[in-house]
Length: 113
Length: 112
Image (cartoon, rainbow over all chains, first blue to last red; front, side, top):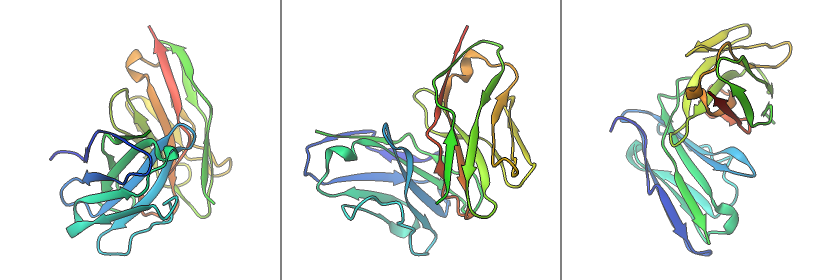
């Protein structure tokens, strides 16, 4: 596709359930980033993949959060045992890496009830 | 750690007014600085950037100058339009990895 695609666009889940959020980056982009946008915390970095290097997981808020990137393309962010404080918009971005422009998807709005 | 602080919003202006949104940062080394914009119903998009001290980024009539001495990157536009209504985010990348640290965002509303 022409841009970064995220799915689903909206997700409502019950507290304690696991959720998976998907990101399809721009074809060929080597770097992929996940961010979280919430009312109380603004835009927070979660995790970063660059090529075949080990991901930078320094922003993941707890061990309930994990992400993988298969074949250097699609990425999945998994939140286990969701809590109400996980409610936020989860944004994915991709780029050629380094200082190049990052292109963002529209985000997945997660609501935990 | 690295951080970005933006002026709180919302900012409400009349069309053709002058805009300034303040942004200051704390970082080790020499970060690259960015302004991103999020229009209603759309994703974040890069507005402008500057990679070293005294650089000026510009786009769509917006400008921001990288001021190392005051650790600032204020966004300015001489004459705003209704179509500029959006949320503006200041951000930095201190490691040249593309990993961004964002400010809290400033909502701009321009009235006709």
